Length: 516
Image 1 (cartoon, helix red, strand yellow):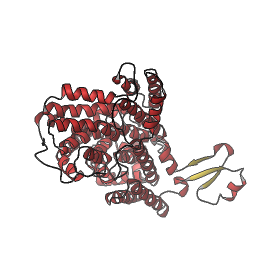
Image 2 (cartoon, helix red, strand yellow; image 1 turned 135 degrees about the horizontal axis):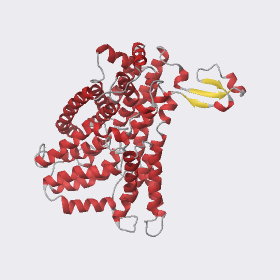
Image 3 (cartoon, helix red, strand yellow; image 1 turned 30 degrees about the vertical axis):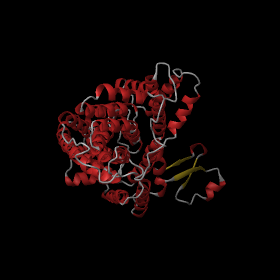
Image 4 (cartoon, rainbow, N blue to C red; image 1 turned 180 degrees about the vertical axis):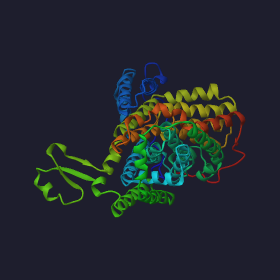
């Protein structure tokens, strides 16, 4: 994920900078209680009961933070202040910004018939149900690499490619998995991604060298993932969308919707040129807005509308404007793609802020440091075991901190200390750190990457008459199908065991330590 190619990661981010600031009954490890409780809640809700409700996860994290109060020694003030401290961290705000901007962009080009254009193009070139997930994986990976935000890519592709693929007969869970896999690929490999920047800076390595050195790992996983999507696409059936209705929808597809490839190009081009990702996506929104109006793809009121009471005099006088609509007194509202694109992520935004608060409590309570010290002194006793510990350590942190950049910042000091102890090169350390946080951030059912996609899918029944709620993929169902994520983690487990790609500090020095 990335929202700023030049973000700083200093005092304003998650960091364990000394002795515990909060004491808990049960010692330092008790500071992990809120996050552990949340993970258990999420497993019960999403995994056992199969309830994919983001608001339910918000309730779980709130309960966890409340119960954590009773484990604090002495005054609860420090604990309460830490909650506020965590919720105001910039690392959480970056995710929020990415979701809001990407949501507005995706919803606007969706309103402009882009999905209809994709259906027309896929039907015209013969990309059927079996190939659609594999093609989606490649395209999502390219977009995420170009703009540097896996979250933004997940939002866009879940809103646009998912309904097109389901309509053409692709398996929904497999298709959702291919979107998340593309996001993993881009988050891991994009030079402008926050995860790439953090992994390089925290391991004293230059960004260019890190990206070049990690390509061999990423491409192995990507080739295997692409092959897996081809095989699975051919063997896994999709949903039966009333045959006649499907044919009518395909035959009435709007090729002009493909003009919004230009909207996406505006985002990619601006981002690659080095502009802030907010600026890049804003340009995409502007281009999409203009395309919709100029080519008649959508009315102004479909993108922004104020529904005012017909009883108000001023509203009657302004009714000639394209964004003012008169309604009965009880039906007033604000609507359109810009509103809907942002509104769908509000519960997820609250959840993210609360989770980062829980992580801050574990840091201030010394839990992270205690676990890291134990691993450093008792488990990581050889180079191979050290590298395997790096992989498993990132998995542990990502299971609790669901925003991959935040998880990466939390574990980065440990990776640096462990790598330096065994003379492991900064490039290698950065690659292990980034690959696993990028991958696992889109695998766990309660992780930010999965939930942002799920939040997008939940809005599709309101967009398409043919799209039913049963077509929405529950977060637990997609876990096995994030092929690139699983394969990327596997590549580094194998690399840790075999020494593939291992470099020591003396083998190669970073030419230039890039500091964001």
